[in-house]
Image 1: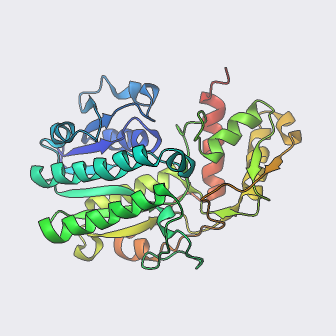
Image 2 (image 1 turned 120 degrees about the horizontal axis):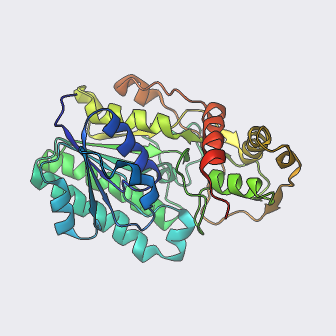
Image 3 (image 1 turned 135 degrees about the vertical axis):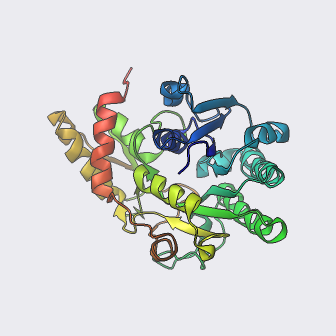
Length: 327
């Protein structure tokens, strides 16, 4: 890629966004990061602030003028900014909608008006809703099970309309349970893997929602980075203006996930192997099983995920052991 190509990464101080910032900075792109610190952290991007090809804008996607300023002279947008978490959206559907729908629409409008080449956005496996078919294929979805799921489906509808009506190239990436370095273990809506890692490192018992037999297509961050790059750069006309599952294409139960976590963490602290696992009630809005078909991404984007769940988890555990503050 030619130097001087500019990528805007919204939510760039967050877990996925900061990993994308790092990757594209290393590749020599000009990277603009937009974040409002709602779920992002300064420590995720502090190492980039002095780099000549990095620009940070503190701002909120709910403000259209902020979005317009962020997309100025930008070639590609990787839109990661959102309020994630099913429970958060159930507790506060209005804010989730303002950020995930109104903010998303602001970014589409700003990108359209600025002549952005392509708008790649974080969609969600929650869009599959109550569809029981496995594996999940992009063309078959059910009814959403949470306000969060509704917002992410609305994103896909808006992106489709902007492609057809205004000619803005869009690609949605339906993320499946992404995990890896820099994922925040703290807070009420922390994802299960970093939360359990922190608890096990403290010798605290993690609590699994349900009997532990629910399964997920846990997807390591490097596979997600690969999908964003492929979506951004593909020259295949059949690959744009659509959505793709972004996953490894395998499923792991929560019980299996905890087993591997304890196994890998025990290499650093043998006492972790003896920590008891507890069980609680199922969580409202959760789907029992999640497994992605990645055939469409392989065919149209030539996606080849490099990290299985176990490989990615081992990498993530190593990162957390060396970086997680337990104070």
